[in-house]
Every structure is written in structure tokens, then in C-alpha cells.
Image 1 (cartoon, one colour):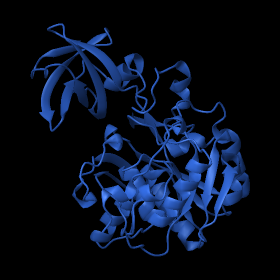
Image 2 (spheres, rainbow, N blue to C red):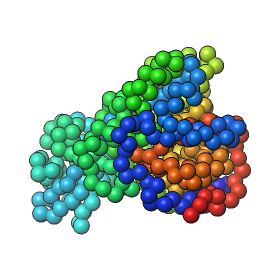
Image 3 (tube, rainbow, N blue to C red):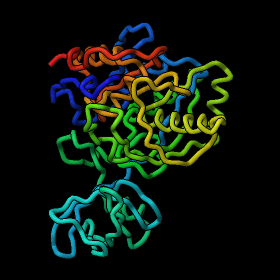
Length: 360
């Protein structure tokens, strides 16, 4: 069984991308071939790596301006990060304050409007907005950059930390593999005969939650809302019938599809359109049902996302790829470079940890 230290590695701080490149598809792309070869490319070359008739599945979630500064009625300053919109006027939120806000108290957000504090839901608070929360969030909130980006938000981030196909508001973090796709790349994919489809998974702040136990099987994933539309199911069926590949753009797309597929299998039925929530945790030993290839960024050490891609492409394959990426000074995390992975044919057995294979 793999343990958490098997997914650790050392990364120089200067390899953590602090800014997005001006041109989305100018990022680098490390193609990890099925035979183990590592091919250094530019992301703009992606269309040539995909066959006509293959299906790319994108996550069309849109990042909310979910971060607020606020003041309690007592005068104490707080920080609010909205985790999820739960109704027309209600959200679940993280609140950072010197003292917990009381049930029924009010908080003034962005010096613009007041919300009332409802019951706690585990570590989150229910907040009641005076009217349409999506409109208020969009008008007064700030985009929540990941915690490893050590600078202030700027106006460039407002557009650059959204994908071109972002359409459904609800995420508090971007599906970052999608950030590399620009209009010329999408046009090149269309010209090559590559098909495209979308799903929605609203990425929560829990995507940055560390795994706190060495036994990874004991980690509890955060829950996220997702939607598999009928058009996507039809596209997957047509792709399978044509013996072509289904390619997930990002770990969020793979989680939504595999969650839906797993639940369908449990109920002895085929994949179908669904709106649901998932806390699926994909780790080595998982048998993938739908996805053949994956476009993804480089992920944090000891993270659930690194564990997921290791399950998908093989632990040893990911170790070699990360070793290569660090040696070649690829840019890491949300604003960093990308990888193109192919599903491993067999499940690997654990050996020594990633840390033993990667440079300091």
C-alpha cells in the first residue's frame, strides 16, 4: 500500500509560477508517452498529439469572486472565503476571525452590504445574503488566488484565472488545466477533427486541503457539486463506438466522470446525465472506467491531485516525469506548465517514495 511520503518531493520556490504567461498556449507541455518516453513540447502543439475523433472533456465552471474583507457588528475585522453557493441568498463560507461570529450576528462585507450568520456546517458557516448572492459576489468580491501565489491580485488575474469556456459560476479555484487553451488552440483542435464536450464541477477550497495522515486511505475528501449533461453522455458513447479516446482536461473533469461512472456501476446501469455531489478520492489501485488520457498541470507534493495522477499514469511514470520537469525547470501549479498523460495499463506495486527520486 502506498503511504503519503511516497508522494512527496522537493521543489525550489522559484519553480512555483507566480504569474500567468501573457499567451495561454505558450506554456510548456510534457507529454508522457505510453512507452515511458518524455517529450518536451509547447502547449500549442497539443492538437498534433490528439487523434481525429478523440473527445476532449472540459470543465466549464467559472470562478467566483469569493474572497471578502468584512467587519463584525462588534467592530472586529474578519476574512470570508465563500466555499459554495447553496441557494439564491445563501452560501457556505470559511470565516477567519479572532473570535467566532455568533449565530444571528451580522457581518458587513466589502463595506457594501450586510450578511447574517447562520448555523455552522462542520468548519463552515451558513451566510444569508440580503438578495441575489451571485450578483453581490460578482460586484463586490475579489478573485481568490491560490495560497501559494505570494502576491496581491491584479486586474490581469480577473480574466487570466478564468478559462475561455467558463460559463457556470460556482468555483472558488480554477480548473487550471483549462487555462492553457486559447482560441487558436481550440480552432486547431476543431480543424483536426477533435471533438469537444463540457461538464461542470465547482472546485472548492478543499482542493488545497493537505492530506494529514500517512495512511492515505484515511483521508476524507471535501465534497464538490458536479453536473454531467446529456450531451456529454452522448458524446462519450459515440466516441467509444468509434474506438476513439476520451481525454479529460484537468483532474476536476476526471473526478466528475469517474464519480458518475462509479455510481452508475454500483447501480448496475450505464452512465447517464446526473447532478450530484462527490467526495471521490482516486488513489493507486483505482480502476478507471472512462478516461483514456489526461491533460493536467503539475501538482503540490503530498496532495490528493498528485495521488490521482499517479493512480492514472502510474506512480513510477509520474516520478520520472516530475524528476524531469524539475531538472528542466518547468513552471509548477496553477499558473504553471502542463502534462499530457496516458492511462497506465496495469497497477504498479509500491516501492520507494517520490522524494528519493527527485532532486533537492
